Image (tube, rainbow over the protein chains, first blue to last red):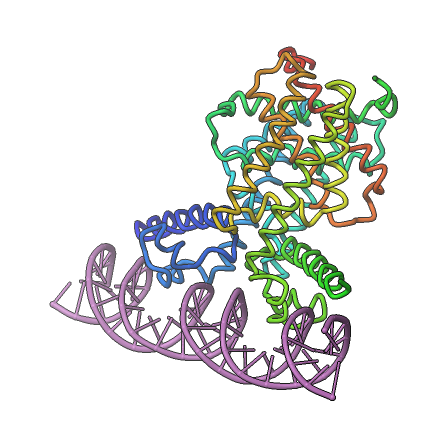
Length: 203
Length: 203
DNA sequence: GTCATCAGTTAACGCTCGCTAACATCCTCA
DNA sequence: TGAGGATGTTAGCGAGCGTTAACTGATGAC
């Protein structure tokens, strides 16, 4: 039992360091020896915990996709109405983006390095997550076409996922301030879905 | 002269295919043989045109960064006022994002694979481009702090650069429609910089 | 007509990488 | 006590990589 606990903790430790390294230098740019060194063991020692380097990436991507979807679904059903659901989706996504920066980075960057079966699974989870958003945004902004909504949702993902790209500079807002700002920006962007015309001629 | 023209054209052809492959499978995930095959020659034949694989990536990243900055500066000085300058920056960035998808992808993904000198150069060009945006956005939305403006500019980059991530699905808007939508979303997001409070209590 | 240059080829080198094999150590528990 | 599983280690393999070397054919200049 204690051995099992130690093992799980080691696994998680490896996954966390692997995610960080993959995000920093790319999947192909990191060797198993480096991952091992990051947790204090040698490269081949990793094979006591994972079938291979691919398996680590697969577990990371399936995990983040699944958690995003699960949390998103829960937040939507618990919300009082569409506006509250949208706000909850935005807040939840921001928490993921800020707290799990490396995973968010990997999530849209290294998907093609997976075996086909894993890639299909991750794609399916991602698609369901997008659909969750599209349904909610479509109800909050009924004037927009579904194609517009779908593109806007992807664009808002890009907006919210921008945090990992700027590495902890001092000239940036703190966590709470950044979270609130991203939320306002996302709501502002989606709010533009309502105005179908008259955007060109203000000046 | 004719030989030089042929050579330049070949160089550009190689750069275009290399950008596409790097964006698809990552810098480390593409071999020189594949790049050569994409333009109809063998791997080592590339060394008649480039010093190495690194040099191709460097030329791509320096090129896109420089062109973004140059076009951005030109658009700002040619604009009638801050609002027009911001709109011109947005339109210009969208054109880059849509027309040079692979380069936009590489631009924020493979920067760390460069030699230090090249990386410094690209970073400097990127920073100047960001400053161009920050100055304009700060004038259009004087109520926001500079930290907010800076984070918002990065977020809008993420929004505008989201196009490359969705690969030409049929359920998406066409080029002109997508361009107009992205512009509205970006303006909507930045518009949220003006409302400092009262965003939480609408429902 | 010859010769230099350009643009390509194939062969091969040295290095790195993911992974396996074989062995060592510790912990647990009957 | 001692057998066995869990978790490491080091050595080494086989493949793939970027790059260089040596060579070949075409083309244009004098």
